[in-house]
Length: 453
Image 1 (cartoon, helix red, strand yellow):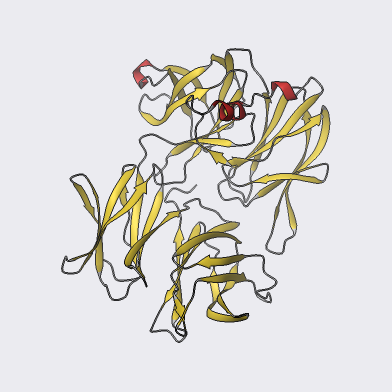
Image 2 (image 1 turned 90 degrees about the horizontal axis):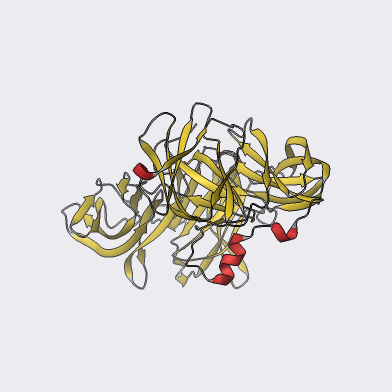
C-alpha cells in the first residue's frame, strides 16, 4: 500500500483521490481507528475491533481506516502463527472521538512492541494543512526538523519542531503548498535527511513517522507520511545511495567479475566463483550498463541495463537462456530485519526435464508432517527465467520444486531442513546442476540490512 509522493502534476481525478481530506464523510458523532506498523521485525499484524477482524498491515504501512460511532471499543492486535492460529499481541480500549482518527502506532522490537495512540483531526482549515512528526527511531535518537518552502535549501529552512522518542503529537497548521523537509540530530546543523519537494494539500492532517530506513544507509532514517487515506507515502533520503551485487550461475564461466558503467565512470567488483555473490558496490540512483568478465579479463556479456533507486539493494543474476544465451535478471533485495516471517524471492532458472522443455514449476514450502497439498506456502506456476515472492513463517521447511507433466507431478528437487529462521529475508535460486543426483539444486541466500537495532 506504499505510494509515491503526491504531485501537483497528477491528473485531477487522481489528485482528488489522494487528497482525500475526509471532511465530507465524518461528523461530530463519527471517528476512525487505524494501525500503523512501525515494528521493524514484525509479521503481518491484524486489527480487531470488538472481536471482529477489520484489516492488517506489514511493517512501514497502515491498515484501512475504519469508522465508528463515538464511544469506547475493545481493540486487539493479532497475527497468525505457522499453525494458522491467531496470537494476541496486545489488547486495549480505544475511545473513538468525533472528527478524529485514533492512530495506533506499534513500534520497537516485536518481541516486546510499544503501542502508542495518537488522536489526529480528520480536517484542517481551508488553505491550510496540519502536520507533525513522530519519532519511532529509538529512545537514544532525537531530531530537529526543518521545513523550507518549495525546493528551498537548508540555509533557508525554518526549525519546525524538535522530536524526542515517542513524544506527544503537536500538530501545527501550515499553508498548502510545496515543502522540503530537512532533519538533523538534535542540536546539530548537519543534515542527515533531506526529502524531495513535497506537496501538502489543504484541509488534511499529516503525521510523518521518523523511523530507521533499514536499507542501504547505515543508521539512515526514512519518513513514512500517514494521511487520512489508507496508505503511507514513503519519503526517502535524497542523498541516500543504492547498492548492487552480482552472482553468476553459469558453471562454464568461473571465476568472473562484473562492472557497472555510467558515462565514463566504471566500478568493478571482486572476482568470484560461480554461484557466489560478489561484495556490494555502492552507487548513486541511476541507470547503469552491466558487464561480466572472465578471469583473463575477456568480456563475456555487456550492455545489460540495471536501474537503481535510492536506498535500493539489488542483485544481478547472470544465467544461460536456452534460446538467447547469457542473460541477466535483476532481483530487488528486501533488507528489513524480519524475525517472525520472511519474504523469499524465488528465482526459477530450470529449463528442462528428461529432454522436455519445462515452462513453469510449482514451489512448495512444507513443515514437518505437512504435505504439498496441505501447505499454504506455495509459489504456483513460476515461469522459467522469472521470479516471485512468497512470505513464509519463521520455521524450518522442506522445499519441493515440482513439474507437472500430463497430470503427473514430478519432483525436480526436494531440500529438507531449509532454515528460514535468521533475521532478514531470502533469495532462493532454482537451477540445473550436473553434479547432483537430481540434476538440479537450490541456492539460498540471506538478505538483511547492516543496520539493526
